[in-house]
Length: 241
Length: 241
DNA sequence: CGGCAGGTTGACTTGCTTCAACGACTGTGG
DNA sequence: CCACAGTCGTTGAAGCAAGTCAACCTGCCG
Image 1: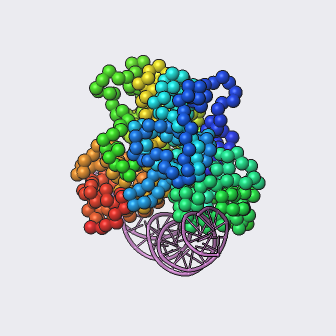
Image 2: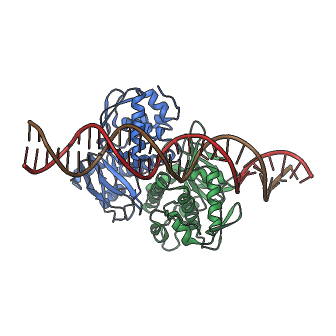
Image 3: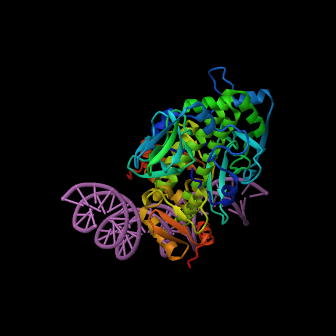
């Protein structure tokens, strides 16, 4: 998942990483590996906008994103929406629920996922302590990331939120300043993730462009021109040029 | 933890409970039971305001609240604070971290906790599958509750937040309308939990009192006089009298 | 080439914050 | 037991960041 933690950027910068790929080092069992050995995962495609599962449904499956982006959101009765998380390639989602999904998952772009029966995953967890650790780490990381998101929504300004969002996306993707960062989701999705309106997101991006912190080659790409400035913005320094 | 979920109040009301007491029904092993059999928990006291652990510290212990209230918060460099969670009697905290705590835990009132070495807890998890389930359920529930909190901070108005807060506290405590609900934390803590200022919390409570939804016998107690109205307020109906 | 979804910009409004003063508990020491 | 200090809570007035409403732009797809 996307970690929005900017309160302690250092934590993110060096420390943690959600396992992005199967562990390359030791002979340590990972879910992906064992699951593929046992053929308990199915590759499934979803086209742009399609619902993967709905809030309240029976939580039968867990998923791992192979390609594309998924948004996990909660919609209020009157239509207000909050996106809790974007799942990007390598991220897992759907395991975090007990009997029923508590969020709706939709494909932001055309998406390829591997789908696992939750029961199988849980069985693997009972069988292999490595996998158990992986699942627990996943839950911990998800919770921790939600807490960072809480700080953002509760206490940060629009500029801080947008800057933090760009930085965390770039860091999740391993993008260096100067390279082009893809924004698979639309402006409304960004707004719903950040707890803002689409207009505010737009204006803020325009501001950042005007201050030469970023450039925006097209609506789905951003280039970070001045990471220092962006980091300063993310932490509340209110400078301009 | 305090579940701020008001989107599906039913979920909380019937469904889940973090084990409040040792399981009374089946011969199902619970952390409290086994831990006390093996004497791996220590009772510890903290007086009002004392820090139980700090953000960034080595996560050596997990805790279970016996009495009092604990706030789990994140403080930004410039002092802005977001409370992620209040832990009340029966709630567990501190297990949700890997190597280091990601939040600061402080006693809101004089507090009695049971302190467990995380290593012991994890060992029990490896040994007993019931306990493993309990731990996983705890992590899931915490994540889910954080997601409900996200919706609140991202998309709800001040009135909705305050109303939802009161309802979820009452429901956590099992308080029926008409009974007095204790607010162990001060106004500033409530504000920091809800992502508001202390003044806004105050004014909103005063408004609710003026609409006869609640009464406020003293600053640490609220009586819910009209649960229907409070629920309506929590979901955005903007009525008055 | 035309239609439409998604994005941008501007003008105005507003809910919440900020700043400031005042009120009411609570605990302590005379 | 009361006076007093300090903390915490409440209320008011003014300002502002972000929301709302509305028009316009832009690129994409049939």
